[in-house]
Length: 295
Image (tube, rainbow, N blue to C red; front, side, top):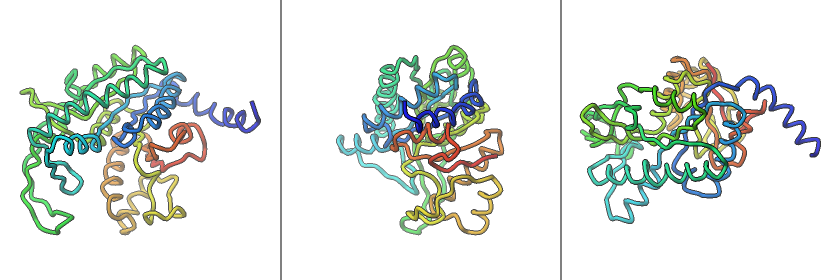
């Protein structure tokens, strides 16, 4: 083994010792899970976290695959301000894609690495108790017009029941949770995976929430590599919002992360899911690869 690799192991050791027995919630985007090579590489990294004693809970969505299936079946989709209107047909497809194909693909990849993973949706064990989102008056960002929008079978989380997750984590299983929830009447809802991951992270008192995204962090100016922010405190994140530096999609992401950290999660990370070793580098090196926001 050459010297640089030995140095990497030395750098990782204190982090491994610090995080052993702690809980990480890792959210995978649909784009990460659609490429088998990317998924296989990412699963190796998740397996390593698990093997060194970190309690890992994975949450995933699958919006890209849902859109592709809808195109194949000729089911028109309506997306307003980044949120999908979920009609009856779209809900049926979401069940097939989220709790079916994507969840099983992740489990199969983990099995290749010898990890005892358990596939769940938020409906299992009443993990995600939700209610139907009421119709809302919103400003359509694409048109600028005010609209009365009924998002259909889209849910808002009321509470997270973490008992089943604790049973699995305590027995050294790795839970993989898809982004569905239900109400007390058994009505199933499509729920944003970022939101589920955040609420589970709070409920599990997670050390880290790691969002595997299409981008490798937060930038002051989109596309300008020199403006990437490696580390932020909550106060600095609030200043970006207050001073108008944060724009576009950065605003809701920062707002949700700030609220999350105030509720007990120690750090939140945004990293590029398709970048090989991004997860390990973010967790086990001083430099990291994405943006870390610390409480």
